[in-house]
Image 1 (cartoon, rainbow, N blue to C red):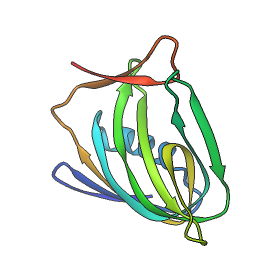
Image 2 (image 1 turned 90 degrees about the horizontal axis):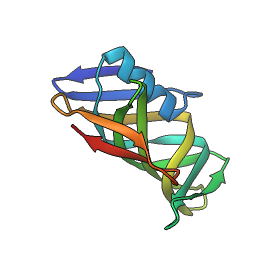
Image 3 (image 1 turned 45 degrees about the vertical axis):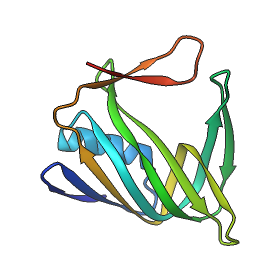
Image 4 (image 1 turned 90 degrees about the vertical axis):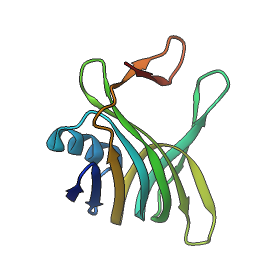
Length: 142
């Protein structure tokens, strides 16, 4: 991973073998920020695990293992109550057959490259807190 910062904007390049969530969480610790909006991301990934949350607050999971074009990535980063960085990301991919897949991102590994823009929210205080009877980790503002 390499990154550059201009004010509150971070532009990140992820390299083959890096997992998106893990890399962005590590970046939050390295660059010392607590909250950010993940505004865009493109590249080529593999091992894409994604899905959606049902009305009963349970995630349905899907997988697409072959490499695919990362068409869009967006979300946010906040801290859990224990201070650990937590990313909530949605993504859209296109297979080599032009089949589009999209949803909540559970895991995705960079295959060729990932280029991601993040806007640091330097004045925001955001915390992720588990919800009772839910797989969702809710975003709270202070």
